[in-house]
Structures are given as C-alpha cells and as structure tokens.
Length: 130
Image (cartoon, rainbow, N blue to C red; front, side, top):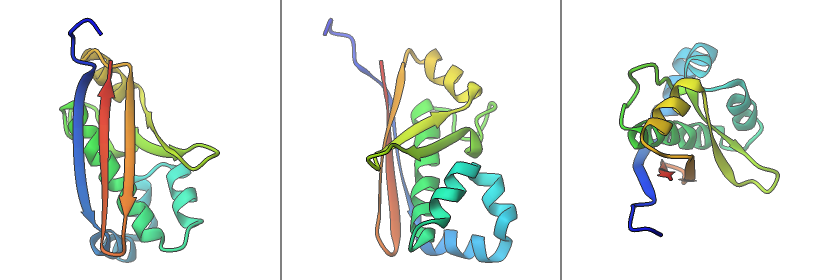
C-alpha cells in the first residue's frame, strides 16, 4: 500500500422486514418491479421467508447508494443497484452503467456487499474498494 486509502466509500442500512412485507402485500408486483430486478425477484420468491430476503436486498440497495454518496438521485435507481448470489451463495453487487460511472468517479474499482437478516430486521453494508 502506498499510503492511499483503499476504501473509497462505505454505506450501511437496516430495514424493517414487516415494512417490506406490508409494501409487497399492498402493492404486489408493481412494488417489486419498481425496486427489484427480475433476478432478485426470482431469488427471493424461491426462498422461505421471502420478505426477509427482499428486505435484505432493499437494505443493500440503500447501503450501495450511500457508499456511492448519491442516494437515489443523479440517475442512481434501486433497480440499478442489485444483489445476486454466486454458486456458493455469497452475495455480490451488480451495478448498472450510471452506478458504475458514479463508483468509478470516486476512484473505486469494486463494490463489496454483505447482507444479514432475522425475522424482524435486515441489514446490509457496502464497501467501495480501489
């Protein structure tokens, strides 16, 4: 390391699972398709306690937007920040062009995410690395 910070940004968020469950019940697919990618919807629908998985992904989207420093503005949208899982189940960030450009403007090359959830709350952290 040459003394330059290797972390370009960080964000964290916590989400109330009951709030997400209520939004899904009230708005159904309209809510899901506005916030989540098709891959995220497919993943969550295939899980027991799907509301926990949706809430964790929502928290991840918020954490990623915070790490970039924009929130959901300037072309950064919830669907443009998504989480997919590798074959081993580990989550990884998937960014659209606008989010990738914002991340690179901070000098970051990669976004790392970690999610956790319980019955009542879901939490996520996002780290931008150089």
